[in-house]
Length: 129
Length: 124
Image (cartoon, rainbow over all chains, first blue to last red; front, side, top):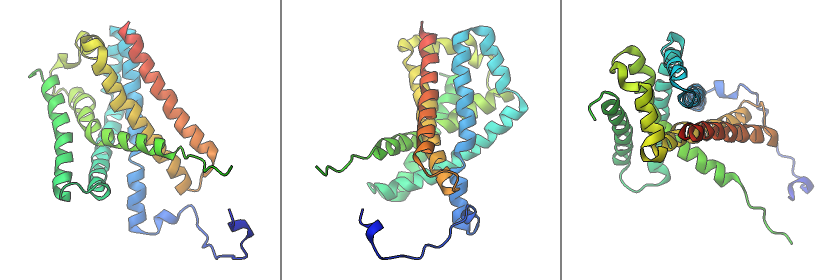
């Protein structure tokens, strides 16, 4: 645009790669962004699950025992915590982007969705449904 | 002559938000049941038996439940993830160009396609 022809030479503060360590709010932001790293692991687990389901029963049993390995469960426990942290930040964002109802009501409604999915899966896999 | 170039960003942000909803609503329950409670032995042993899961995800309703699961638990969360990684690389000053963007979104597309391919293979 016209910027390269402008005689204006604004001072640009140097920004180092560690800028986000300097303030609590920035660290919180980076932590939220990092919630996707364990999610990536779980998505990989699920892709492997779809692969093994289509391969046959012995492959499926291998996948189930993989999912029960302590390090996999530990990583998935971390993913679970990350998903709840992400959910909290994400649900609080929605009423600010689209204020349809009072914010606490919208946030509660979204948590209700998360709880409903978990309850449905628990009932289904628990053999109740 | 000077037509403004249409941005492709709305596509990535739409996929990012859709994936964010899935990450917040679908993923916690899925993790709780199949990745934590089932391996811990809290749920019945046969809850995830091969024939049952096969029937739920690949046979009943033409396998639509499997497609929904692949979309909501793999494809959309992958686009959410790679969008955040793309912008995170910029935040960490590791990448700020087109290459990072192409690598991020193309890997999300590739692995989404792979998940859908496995689902499709399972139908047959």
